[in-house]
Amino acid sequence: MLDTATNSSAALSAAQMEMIEAGGRLCQLIGVPRSVGQIYGLLFMSPYPLSLDDIAERLGISKGSGSTGTRQLLTWNAIRRVWMPGERRDHFVVEPDLGNLIRSTYRDLLKPRLHSSSERIERIADALRNEGADGKLSESELEVCAKRLEMLQRLQKKLQSLIPIAERFL
Amino acid sequence: MLDTATNSSAALSAAQMEMIEAGGRLCQLIGVPRSVGQIYGLLFMSPYPLSLDDIAERLGISKGSGSTGTRQLLTWNAIRRVWMPGERRDHFVVEPDLGNLIRSTYRDLLKPRLHSSSERIERIADALRNEGADGKLSESELEVCAKRLEMLQRLQKKLQSLIPIAERFL
DNA sequence: AAGAACGTTCAATTCGAACTGAATGAATTA
DNA sequence: TAATTCATTCAGTTCGAATTGAACGTTCTT
Image (cartoon, rainbow over all chains, first blue to last red; front, side):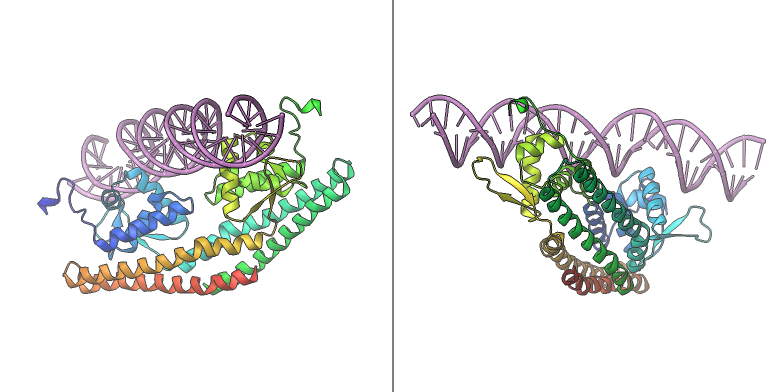
């Protein structure tokens, strides 16, 4: 293929472009680099595996970005490396089951966070009681804050009991 | 109170500082300005309403930031304006029931997004079929992408059915 | 072993969101 | 009505995250 020598076969399909857009926007929304979502979107709509160079070229990003982004996605098990016969470079395919992705996200990010937030609430409650004992706050002032903390604690517990249910459901 | 003339009664309690920290971190995590979470945290641990000046002073942020942040929180019903007798400036208190906050967040942000994402998936599926009809993709290539889109659609529907349940539960 | 082909790293740069603060506008008081 | 007290807006700035691209190390080819 001589005609692909210079910068070649970009040519994204409409479906790919939409998916790249969607992935980018979603990631952007939740505070993940846009390029990460774009890579996922591109691979999601690619019937065959793509190399790092393919990705960088078609998205118009640097190889560095592509490398970082794919690594991120790999750690989340959102994509997989595949070896292609007769090819030296690694290729990537999506793990299209987003349910798994969500479940592992919960396990790795949400769950530990929920736990440490529970500890934090305890710490704040302690601090509050101390200020009360030191007379820095009147009885009624302390009461107000204590009530609020209890609400927070209730919500926290509900979340902790809800999320495992959701996890199984998805 | 003459001694508060210059820049005065900052003096945050330990409980307040922890809560400010927690709110700031949480917001930062989900892509909301840190200052917004800090304002919420401060008010959460304040037994009495605070004015915009109080907030700016105690958090060490500008009045502009405070104004923007409180407005944001007001639109989410996370805080309320209260009028205090003999005071000209508005004061703010938290709406400590975070359950409500979550519910309205779902209604105002998640729900419309889920809907438009559903439309988007349809659009992509259409685009894909068109590329198929134009012969730009082989039958089997098209198949792969179509399968993935179906998975996405299934997940999307599950989410749509799950979230209302969670909404009532919290 | 030399050279080429890849992937990764990291210092420098770019880019955009958040913040500031002066200016503006609205409301209140004298 | 003029002066004062607040809240809001917005143009400019700051700051941090994301991206770049050159340099490096590794693995394959000849």
